[in-house]
Length: 392
Ligand SMILES: Cc1ncc(COP(=O)(O)O)c(C=O)c1O
Image 1 (cartoon, rainbow, N blue to C red):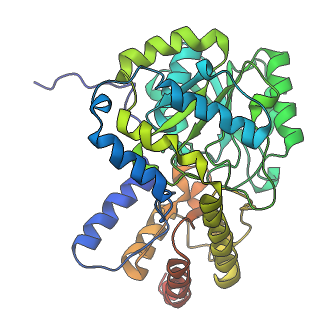
Image 2: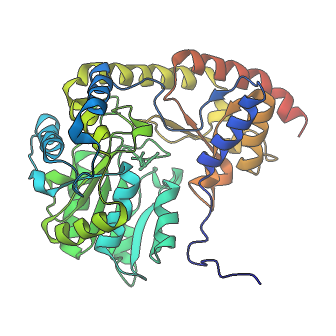
């Protein structure tokens, strides 16, 4: 007899992670791949972070549970980081250290909304937002943010609808487009949400990864927003699974109870390492210079028809290529990415991960790797593409 399996939780796969699985199999078979599929820095965190982690493993007090929102010294250090970068200082009591920002989103969704609530978010956007919302019984409301809209989500579409959403989730810099909101736009969104009683969740996980300016935090303009961040990107601690949220006062108690019951608390040794991650912005900023070089190299060397009418790539470490100029026969980004992986040995993520409607026309390339890998990827794509198109 077939037993019950959840229908609500039957969400689409996260294709970037599925591609990563496929690359592991190919590499196990001896294939030399270039990885542009995953948004993870190829460089490790600063050595002081590794030393602090290693030291913590010998310490007697770090093998036990942490308190749910994380140990106070780290929360104080995160609060001080807002002073360093934005000139504001949240109360450390409002900082919650989470298991990657991924669990931060689950806490935010569960703490701020109820089943059936509607949350607006940009399309294309990071797939886990939409998928997690569906698993939790929330209703994603997709805001177009495509080339014709200048790649920015159209808030006007919300204001003109019959019913305002209960929440709005935005990311800047955005994944997969690399679009960075101006300070004026961040301020406008914060004020609009406050004026309309819409809870803002601002994903600032790619802060630090911009090339021409340092974006403002929503924390400067809103005391009701949930601000989400992570050690995964700028801080190069992707696999450590550590992030944080800055919570408004009205969500503190409910979220703390959720964290206690969902995962008890974040890893103690990882928190010890993260404590010193903020002490070496100089080393981390060197990576940002490399990302800029990588981006410029790909934009210069990849065939223009492969990049097409791409999104701006002003921040994060992604190029959201537009395949429509390649051939009218390239209609499916999953098949295209699969051919690129198996024939040219370059792994990328199909756009349909980020946009279920128009994503088949797009491919996301992550340039968080080494510059040598970008050179290799560009050579491989340039030599593979003509024969691929000819055989379509
Ligand atoms: C926009 C965005 N938000 C959140 C996450 C989740 O990251 P983590 O759980 O590693 O903090 C990612 C991961 O790629 C992302 O791109």
